[in-house]
Amino acid sequence: MAEVQEIDVQTAHDWAAAGDAVLLDVREAPELAAAAIAGAVHSPMSSFDFENVPGGNGKKLVVFCAHGMRSYQVADYLLREGKVDAAYSMAGGITDWAGAGLPVE
Image 1: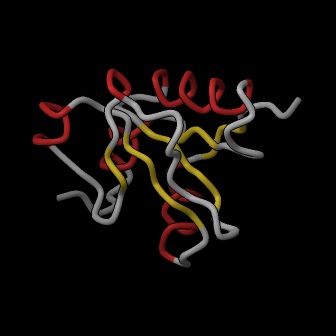
Image 2: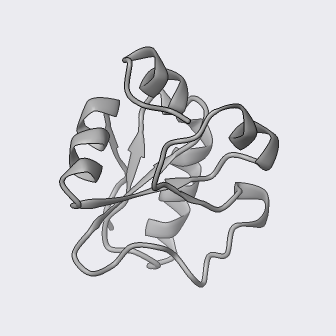
C-alpha cells in the first residue's frame, strides 16, 4: 500500500504553479477566512466528501491544513481506502506557506 508523502511548501507551490497539482485545503471555514491560497479547492475535514475527491487527470493531490496534521490524516485515509493512488501532505500547512512568503489571500 502507498504511504503518504510529505512535501515542503515550495514544492507544493511549484507543482501548483506548473499546473501539475491540485491543492486541497481541509481547514474549517473560520480558518479559511483568515488566509487562503488562490486556486485551492476547499473541503473542510469535518464534512469532507470522500466519494468525490478532487484531482485526477494526471495531477498530484496535495492536501494541506494549518500545520500539517489534518492534511496527513486525510491523505492517509484516502490512500488506505483506495480513493487515490498517491497523496501528498504539505508539511507545515498554510502557516509555513505564508511564513515562506508564498502568496495568500
